[in-house]
Image (cartoon, rainbow, N blue to C red; front, side, top):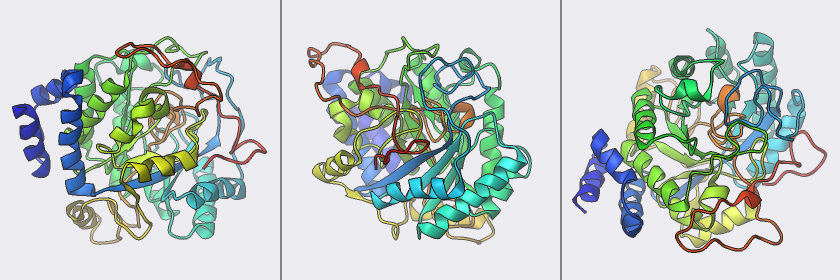
Length: 424
Protein backbone atom coordinates (compact mmCIF):
# COMPACT_ATOMS: atom_id res chain seq x y z
CA UNK A 1 0.00 0.00 0.00
CA UNK A 2 1.31 3.41 -0.94
CA UNK A 3 -0.19 4.79 2.29
CA UNK A 4 1.79 2.44 4.50
CA UNK A 5 5.04 2.96 2.59
CA UNK A 6 4.59 6.71 3.00
CA UNK A 7 3.87 6.38 6.72
CA UNK A 8 6.91 4.17 7.29
CA UNK A 9 9.16 6.63 5.47
CA UNK A 10 7.77 9.52 7.51
CA UNK A 11 8.10 7.57 10.76
CA UNK A 12 11.74 6.76 10.11
CA UNK A 13 12.35 10.48 9.50
CA UNK A 14 10.25 11.55 12.53
CA UNK A 15 7.98 13.45 10.17
CA UNK A 16 4.36 14.10 11.13
CA UNK A 17 1.79 12.41 8.88
CA UNK A 18 -1.19 14.36 7.62
CA UNK A 19 -4.56 14.12 9.32
CA UNK A 20 -5.89 12.42 6.19
CA UNK A 21 -3.18 9.76 6.43
CA UNK A 22 -3.91 9.14 10.10
CA UNK A 23 -7.64 8.80 9.36
CA UNK A 24 -6.85 6.41 6.50
CA UNK A 25 -5.04 4.07 8.93
CA UNK A 26 -8.20 3.84 11.06
CA UNK A 27 -10.23 3.15 7.91
CA UNK A 28 -8.15 0.21 6.68
CA UNK A 29 -9.89 -3.15 6.34
CA UNK A 30 -9.33 -6.31 8.36
CA UNK A 31 -7.75 -7.83 5.24
CA UNK A 32 -5.06 -5.13 5.45
CA UNK A 33 -4.54 -5.43 9.21
CA UNK A 34 -1.31 -7.45 9.19
CA UNK A 35 0.19 -5.03 6.67
CA UNK A 36 -0.69 -2.14 9.00
CA UNK A 37 0.90 -3.92 11.99
CA UNK A 38 4.03 -4.74 9.98
CA UNK A 39 4.41 -1.13 8.83
CA UNK A 40 4.01 0.26 12.34
CA UNK A 41 6.44 -2.41 13.53
CA UNK A 42 9.17 -1.07 11.26
CA UNK A 43 8.86 2.35 12.88
CA UNK A 44 8.75 0.85 16.38
CA UNK A 45 11.92 -1.20 15.79
CA UNK A 46 13.77 1.78 14.33
CA UNK A 47 13.44 3.77 17.56
CA UNK A 48 12.95 1.11 20.26
CA UNK A 49 14.33 -2.14 18.90
CA UNK A 50 12.61 -5.20 20.39
CA UNK A 51 12.56 -3.91 23.97
CA UNK A 52 9.38 -3.78 26.08
CA UNK A 53 9.32 -1.46 29.07
CA UNK A 54 7.33 -2.73 32.07
CA UNK A 55 5.44 -0.33 34.33
CA UNK A 56 3.66 -1.07 37.59
CA UNK A 57 0.71 0.78 39.15
CA UNK A 58 0.25 1.45 42.84
CA UNK A 59 -3.13 2.97 43.74
CA UNK A 60 -2.30 5.18 46.72
CA UNK A 61 -5.89 6.25 47.36
CA UNK A 62 -8.88 4.49 45.81
CA UNK A 63 -12.38 5.78 45.08
CA UNK A 64 -14.32 8.72 46.50
CA UNK A 65 -13.28 11.12 43.71
CA UNK A 66 -15.27 14.38 43.44
CA UNK A 67 -14.87 14.54 39.64
CA UNK A 68 -17.52 13.18 37.25
CA UNK A 69 -15.42 11.52 34.50
CA UNK A 70 -17.93 9.21 32.83
CA UNK A 71 -15.44 6.41 32.18
CA UNK A 72 -14.13 6.14 35.72
CA UNK A 73 -15.15 3.63 38.39
CA UNK A 74 -13.91 6.04 41.08
CA UNK A 75 -16.01 8.99 39.87
CA UNK A 76 -18.54 10.98 41.82
CA UNK A 77 -21.71 8.89 41.98
CA UNK A 78 -20.08 5.66 40.78
CA UNK A 79 -21.94 2.54 41.81
CA UNK A 80 -19.07 0.25 40.79
CA UNK A 81 -18.20 -2.04 43.70
CA UNK A 82 -14.52 -1.16 43.82
CA UNK A 83 -12.10 -1.03 46.72
CA UNK A 84 -12.28 2.27 48.61
CA UNK A 85 -9.51 3.41 50.95
CA UNK A 86 -7.64 6.51 51.92
CA UNK A 87 -3.90 7.17 51.53
CA UNK A 88 -1.50 4.23 51.86
CA UNK A 89 1.40 4.82 54.23
CA UNK A 90 4.81 5.24 52.54
CA UNK A 91 6.03 1.80 53.65
CA UNK A 92 2.81 0.16 52.42
CA UNK A 93 3.18 1.82 49.02
CA UNK A 94 6.86 0.87 48.85
CA UNK A 95 6.04 -2.74 49.66
CA UNK A 96 3.43 -2.78 46.88
CA UNK A 97 5.92 -1.24 44.46
CA UNK A 98 8.55 -3.84 45.32
CA UNK A 99 6.29 -6.61 43.99
CA UNK A 100 6.19 -4.95 40.58
CA UNK A 101 9.93 -4.26 40.54
CA UNK A 102 10.60 -7.91 41.41
CA UNK A 103 8.48 -8.87 38.41
CA UNK A 104 10.62 -6.76 36.08
CA UNK A 105 8.97 -3.35 36.23
CA UNK A 106 11.31 -0.46 35.51
CA UNK A 107 8.86 2.26 36.43
CA UNK A 108 6.42 2.53 39.32
CA UNK A 109 3.37 4.75 38.84
CA UNK A 110 1.98 6.24 42.06
CA UNK A 111 -1.65 7.17 41.48
CA UNK A 112 -4.22 8.82 43.74
CA UNK A 113 -7.86 9.57 43.01
CA UNK A 114 -9.12 13.10 43.36
CA UNK A 115 -9.29 16.41 41.50
CA UNK A 116 -5.73 17.25 42.41
CA UNK A 117 -3.34 17.20 45.37
CA UNK A 118 -3.27 19.63 48.25
CA UNK A 119 0.14 20.81 49.42
CA UNK A 120 -0.17 18.33 52.28
CA UNK A 121 -0.84 15.57 49.75
CA UNK A 122 2.31 16.55 47.86
CA UNK A 123 4.29 16.24 51.11
CA UNK A 124 2.78 12.80 51.70
CA UNK A 125 3.61 11.64 48.17
CA UNK A 126 7.14 13.03 48.53
CA UNK A 127 7.68 10.73 51.52
CA UNK A 128 6.30 7.82 49.50
CA UNK A 129 8.63 8.56 46.59
CA UNK A 130 11.59 8.58 48.98
CA UNK A 131 10.54 5.23 50.47
CA UNK A 132 10.05 3.61 47.06
CA UNK A 133 13.42 4.79 45.78
CA UNK A 134 15.25 3.86 48.95
CA UNK A 135 13.97 0.30 48.85
CA UNK A 136 14.05 -0.22 45.07
CA UNK A 137 17.37 0.81 43.58
CA UNK A 138 17.25 2.25 40.07
CA UNK A 139 13.46 2.39 39.83
CA UNK A 140 11.77 5.29 38.06
CA UNK A 141 8.80 6.91 39.79
CA UNK A 142 5.92 8.57 37.99
CA UNK A 143 3.29 10.47 39.97
CA UNK A 144 -0.32 10.73 38.84
CA UNK A 145 -2.27 12.90 41.23
CA UNK A 146 -4.64 14.92 39.07
CA UNK A 147 -4.62 18.63 38.26
CA UNK A 148 -1.53 20.43 39.55
CA UNK A 149 -1.38 23.88 41.13
CA UNK A 150 1.52 26.26 40.62
CA UNK A 151 4.74 25.00 42.18
CA UNK A 152 3.57 21.45 42.84
CA UNK A 153 5.34 19.93 39.84
CA UNK A 154 8.60 21.49 40.98
CA UNK A 155 8.10 20.09 44.48
CA UNK A 156 7.47 16.59 43.12
CA UNK A 157 10.57 16.80 41.00
CA UNK A 158 12.57 17.98 44.00
CA UNK A 159 11.26 14.98 45.94
CA UNK A 160 12.69 12.62 43.34
CA UNK A 161 9.79 12.06 40.94
CA UNK A 162 10.98 11.30 37.43
CA UNK A 163 7.72 11.76 35.57
CA UNK A 164 4.14 12.99 35.84
CA UNK A 165 1.14 11.47 34.13
CA UNK A 166 -2.06 13.24 33.18
CA UNK A 167 -4.05 12.12 30.15
CA UNK A 168 -5.98 14.25 27.69
CA UNK A 169 -8.30 11.24 27.19
CA UNK A 170 -10.32 12.50 24.23
CA UNK A 171 -10.56 15.37 21.78
CA UNK A 172 -11.16 18.94 22.89
CA UNK A 173 -14.40 19.00 20.88
CA UNK A 174 -15.93 16.08 22.78
CA UNK A 175 -14.34 16.55 26.20
CA UNK A 176 -17.36 18.26 27.76
CA UNK A 177 -19.49 15.23 26.85
CA UNK A 178 -17.27 13.03 29.05
CA UNK A 179 -16.45 15.32 31.99
CA UNK A 180 -18.08 18.50 33.28
CA UNK A 181 -16.24 19.16 36.58
CA UNK A 182 -13.05 20.27 34.84
CA UNK A 183 -12.02 21.21 31.31
CA UNK A 184 -9.77 19.97 28.56
CA UNK A 185 -7.71 23.14 29.04
CA UNK A 186 -7.17 22.19 32.70
CA UNK A 187 -5.60 18.93 31.57
CA UNK A 188 -3.36 20.59 29.01
CA UNK A 189 -2.22 23.05 31.67
CA UNK A 190 -1.16 20.25 34.03
CA UNK A 191 0.87 18.48 31.33
CA UNK A 192 2.58 21.77 30.53
CA UNK A 193 3.34 22.38 34.23
CA UNK A 194 5.00 18.96 34.47
CA UNK A 195 7.05 19.64 31.35
CA UNK A 196 8.15 23.06 32.56
CA UNK A 197 9.29 21.61 35.88
CA UNK A 198 11.64 19.18 34.13
CA UNK A 199 9.50 16.12 34.76
CA UNK A 200 9.12 13.59 31.98
CA UNK A 201 5.59 14.21 30.74
CA UNK A 202 3.24 11.27 30.22
CA UNK A 203 -0.14 11.86 28.60
CA UNK A 204 -2.43 9.65 26.58
CA UNK A 205 -5.96 8.82 25.55
CA UNK A 206 -8.91 6.50 26.08
CA UNK A 207 -10.47 4.81 23.06
CA UNK A 208 -13.89 3.23 22.95
CA UNK A 209 -16.03 5.93 24.56
CA UNK A 210 -18.22 6.37 21.47
CA UNK A 211 -15.87 8.84 19.79
CA UNK A 212 -15.46 9.23 16.02
CA UNK A 213 -12.25 8.56 14.10
CA UNK A 214 -11.77 12.31 13.81
CA UNK A 215 -11.77 12.61 17.61
CA UNK A 216 -9.07 9.96 17.97
CA UNK A 217 -6.90 11.70 15.39
CA UNK A 218 -7.52 15.09 17.04
CA UNK A 219 -6.40 13.96 20.49
CA UNK A 220 -3.31 12.16 19.16
CA UNK A 221 -2.27 15.23 17.16
CA UNK A 222 -2.81 17.35 20.28
CA UNK A 223 -0.60 14.98 22.24
CA UNK A 224 2.10 15.17 19.60
CA UNK A 225 2.01 18.96 19.92
CA UNK A 226 2.45 18.69 23.72
CA UNK A 227 5.43 16.39 23.07
CA UNK A 228 5.19 13.99 26.03
CA UNK A 229 7.81 11.28 26.40
CA UNK A 230 5.15 8.63 26.87
CA UNK A 231 1.67 8.14 25.39
CA UNK A 232 -0.46 5.52 27.17
CA UNK A 233 -3.27 4.18 24.99
CA UNK A 234 -6.20 3.02 27.10
CA UNK A 235 -9.20 1.04 25.91
CA UNK A 236 -12.38 1.76 27.84
CA UNK A 237 -13.40 -0.81 30.42
CA UNK A 238 -17.16 -0.34 30.69
CA UNK A 239 -17.58 -0.87 34.41
CA UNK A 240 -21.07 -1.58 35.68
CA UNK A 241 -22.17 1.38 37.78
CA UNK A 242 -20.64 4.03 35.48
CA UNK A 243 -22.33 6.11 32.73
CA UNK A 244 -20.38 4.33 29.97
CA UNK A 245 -21.16 0.81 31.18
CA UNK A 246 -22.88 -0.07 27.88
CA UNK A 247 -20.17 1.30 25.57
CA UNK A 248 -18.71 -1.87 24.07
CA UNK A 249 -17.40 -0.45 20.80
CA UNK A 250 -13.98 -2.06 20.34
CA UNK A 251 -12.72 -5.16 18.54
CA UNK A 252 -9.13 -6.46 18.65
CA UNK A 253 -8.68 -5.28 15.06
CA UNK A 254 -9.90 -1.79 15.89
CA UNK A 255 -7.50 -1.59 18.84
CA UNK A 256 -4.55 -2.55 16.65
CA UNK A 257 -5.43 0.10 14.08
CA UNK A 258 -5.65 2.73 16.83
CA UNK A 259 -2.24 1.73 18.21
CA UNK A 260 -0.74 1.85 14.71
CA UNK A 261 -2.13 5.33 14.11
CA UNK A 262 -0.61 6.51 17.39
CA UNK A 263 2.76 5.01 16.45
CA UNK A 264 2.79 6.76 13.07
CA UNK A 265 1.94 10.13 14.65
CA UNK A 266 4.36 9.59 17.58
CA UNK A 267 7.15 7.51 16.00
CA UNK A 268 9.92 8.17 18.55
CA UNK A 269 7.73 8.47 21.66
CA UNK A 270 7.09 5.66 24.13
CA UNK A 271 3.71 4.18 23.21
CA UNK A 272 2.25 2.22 26.11
CA UNK A 273 -0.59 -0.28 25.96
CA UNK A 274 -2.50 0.62 29.09
CA UNK A 275 -5.89 -0.22 30.55
CA UNK A 276 -8.22 -2.54 28.73
CA UNK A 277 -5.74 -4.54 26.68
CA UNK A 278 -6.79 -7.87 28.14
CA UNK A 279 -10.47 -7.08 27.63
CA UNK A 280 -10.31 -5.78 24.07
CA UNK A 281 -7.11 -7.12 22.45
CA UNK A 282 -7.47 -10.51 24.14
CA UNK A 283 -5.53 -13.20 22.24
CA UNK A 284 -4.17 -10.56 19.83
CA UNK A 285 -2.12 -8.84 22.53
CA UNK A 286 1.20 -10.20 21.13
CA UNK A 287 0.55 -8.40 17.82
CA UNK A 288 0.24 -5.14 19.73
CA UNK A 289 3.81 -5.54 20.99
CA UNK A 290 4.97 -5.04 17.40
CA UNK A 291 3.52 -1.52 17.61
CA UNK A 292 3.85 -0.41 21.24
CA UNK A 293 7.06 -0.63 23.28
CA UNK A 294 5.62 -0.42 26.79
CA UNK A 295 2.92 -2.13 28.89
CA UNK A 296 1.64 -2.31 32.45
CA UNK A 297 2.50 -5.39 34.45
CA UNK A 298 -0.11 -7.05 36.65
CA UNK A 299 -3.21 -5.34 38.00
CA UNK A 300 -4.54 -1.86 37.41
CA UNK A 301 -6.08 0.69 39.75
CA UNK A 302 -9.45 -0.86 40.43
CA UNK A 303 -9.50 -3.81 38.05
CA UNK A 304 -7.46 -6.98 37.76
CA UNK A 305 -5.04 -7.50 34.92
CA UNK A 306 -3.51 -10.50 33.25
CA UNK A 307 -1.21 -12.52 35.49
CA UNK A 308 2.28 -11.01 35.58
CA UNK A 309 3.82 -14.38 34.68
CA UNK A 310 1.60 -14.54 31.60
CA UNK A 311 2.76 -11.05 30.56
CA UNK A 312 6.41 -12.10 30.73
CA UNK A 313 5.74 -15.32 28.81
CA UNK A 314 3.84 -13.38 26.14
CA UNK A 315 6.75 -10.96 25.67
CA UNK A 316 9.28 -13.79 25.36
CA UNK A 317 7.10 -15.92 23.07
CA UNK A 318 6.57 -12.94 20.73
CA UNK A 319 10.34 -12.53 20.38
CA UNK A 320 10.73 -9.40 22.48
CA UNK A 321 12.82 -8.70 25.58
CA UNK A 322 12.08 -6.87 28.81
CA UNK A 323 13.91 -3.54 28.98
CA UNK A 324 16.47 -3.44 31.79
CA UNK A 325 17.09 -0.66 34.27
CA UNK A 326 20.45 -0.05 32.60
CA UNK A 327 18.82 0.62 29.23
CA UNK A 328 17.57 4.01 28.08
CA UNK A 329 13.99 3.95 26.84
CA UNK A 330 13.93 6.93 24.50
CA UNK A 331 16.06 7.46 21.38
CA UNK A 332 19.23 9.46 21.94
CA UNK A 333 17.99 12.55 20.11
CA UNK A 334 15.12 12.88 22.59
CA UNK A 335 17.46 12.36 25.52
CA UNK A 336 19.77 15.07 24.20
CA UNK A 337 16.88 17.47 23.56
CA UNK A 338 15.53 16.95 27.09
CA UNK A 339 18.94 17.54 28.64
CA UNK A 340 19.37 20.72 26.62
CA UNK A 341 15.93 21.97 27.66
CA UNK A 342 16.81 21.31 31.28
CA UNK A 343 20.08 23.14 31.01
CA UNK A 344 22.14 19.99 30.68
CA UNK A 345 21.19 18.80 34.12
CA UNK A 346 20.19 15.23 34.58
CA UNK A 347 20.08 12.18 32.52
CA UNK A 348 16.48 11.29 31.95
CA UNK A 349 15.69 9.50 28.93
CA UNK A 350 13.15 11.91 28.22
CA UNK A 351 13.07 14.84 30.13
CA UNK A 352 14.78 16.91 32.55
CA UNK A 353 16.89 16.27 35.47
CA UNK A 354 16.76 12.82 36.84
CA UNK A 355 16.90 9.38 35.58
CA UNK A 356 13.68 8.71 33.80
CA UNK A 357 13.48 6.53 30.97
CA UNK A 358 11.20 8.24 28.88
CA UNK A 359 8.02 7.87 29.91
CA UNK A 360 5.36 8.36 32.11
CA UNK A 361 3.02 6.58 33.98
CA UNK A 362 0.12 5.59 31.90
CA UNK A 363 -1.31 2.69 33.36
CA UNK A 364 -4.84 3.14 34.18
CA UNK A 365 -7.28 0.66 33.87
CA UNK A 366 -8.41 2.17 30.90
CA UNK A 367 -6.36 4.94 30.32
CA UNK A 368 -3.10 5.87 31.61
CA UNK A 369 -1.56 6.35 34.79
CA UNK A 370 -4.39 7.73 36.71
CA UNK A 371 -6.88 6.31 38.82
CA UNK A 372 -10.01 5.93 36.88
CA UNK A 373 -11.31 2.95 35.26
CA UNK A 374 -11.93 3.72 31.85
CA UNK A 375 -9.04 5.35 30.76
CA UNK A 376 -6.98 8.14 31.76
CA UNK A 377 -4.17 8.95 33.87
CA UNK A 378 -4.25 10.47 37.14
CA UNK A 379 -6.89 11.32 39.51
CA UNK A 380 -8.97 13.48 37.47
CA UNK A 381 -9.02 11.02 34.71
CA UNK A 382 -7.56 7.66 35.18
CA UNK A 383 -8.59 4.34 33.96
CA UNK A 384 -8.51 0.69 34.53
CA UNK A 385 -8.18 -2.26 32.36
CA UNK A 386 -8.88 -5.73 32.59
CA UNK A 387 -9.04 -8.91 34.39
CA UNK A 388 -7.57 -12.34 34.33
CA UNK A 389 -9.47 -14.87 32.28
CA UNK A 390 -11.95 -16.78 34.38
CA UNK A 391 -11.43 -20.41 35.25
CA UNK A 392 -14.15 -21.41 32.77
CA UNK A 393 -14.02 -18.89 29.93
CA UNK A 394 -17.09 -18.15 27.88
CA UNK A 395 -17.34 -19.65 24.43
CA UNK A 396 -15.29 -17.76 21.87
CA UNK A 397 -17.33 -15.47 19.64
CA UNK A 398 -17.74 -16.44 16.00
CA UNK A 399 -15.21 -15.11 13.53
CA UNK A 400 -15.92 -11.51 12.62
CA UNK A 401 -18.50 -11.03 15.34
CA UNK A 402 -18.46 -8.16 17.82
CA UNK A 403 -19.45 -9.88 21.01
CA UNK A 404 -18.41 -8.09 24.19
CA UNK A 405 -16.35 -10.18 26.64
CA UNK A 406 -17.84 -8.82 29.84
CA UNK A 407 -16.51 -11.93 31.59
CA UNK A 408 -13.02 -10.42 31.38
CA UNK A 409 -13.82 -7.45 33.61
CA UNK A 410 -13.06 -8.10 37.28
CA UNK A 411 -12.77 -5.63 40.13
CA UNK A 412 -9.40 -5.72 41.89
CA UNK A 413 -9.60 -7.44 45.28
CA UNK A 414 -5.88 -7.95 45.97
CA UNK A 415 -2.73 -5.89 46.35
CA UNK A 416 -2.73 -2.28 47.57
CA UNK A 417 -5.47 -1.59 50.10
CA UNK A 418 -5.99 -5.28 50.93
CA UNK A 419 -4.23 -7.98 52.94
CA UNK A 420 -3.72 -10.16 49.84
CA UNK A 421 -0.55 -10.39 47.79
CA UNK A 422 -0.49 -8.25 44.64
CA UNK A 423 -0.37 -9.61 41.12
CA UNK A 424 2.99 -8.81 39.56
